[in-house]
Length: 177
Image 1 (cartoon, rainbow, N blue to C red):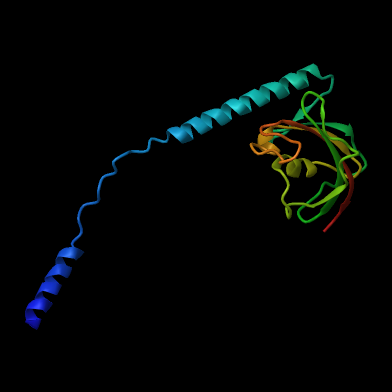
Image 2 (image 1 turned 60 degrees about the vertical axis):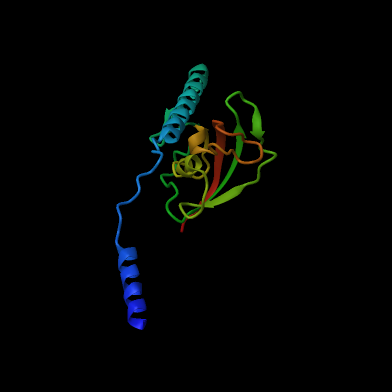
């Protein structure tokens, strides 16, 4: 009896361990959501770049287009210094923020001087790269498309989703590492 039970158990295990061909999926995913998302983001970016280019063309100022995808102009340029912040330097800066219509988002009265350890702290990409262009005492006005600023989510306070920003930044001091 025991032999028959053992034989039956071994036979059952042998049958159960055989691999069958994998089941084919009932539905195939085509990537339509991803394609739609990419198309939507491209449309938003194109619309923002058009708004920014119109803003700049209607301005009497000469903005420089950076290789990072934002624009800037010098309000105060420091010609005496060559030093720009490097990795680990601590940059002390003040700022204000407007939208492309000139409406205040954060006025100078609403903001406090900030400090940033270059490449060691998280700040949005546009400001991170913009601060690395600046010298002590310089004041620069930046125009950041939303994907280099607060993007799809905004700042969860005053900056809405997909909002291009005018950021004026003054570097008060740079402490070298």
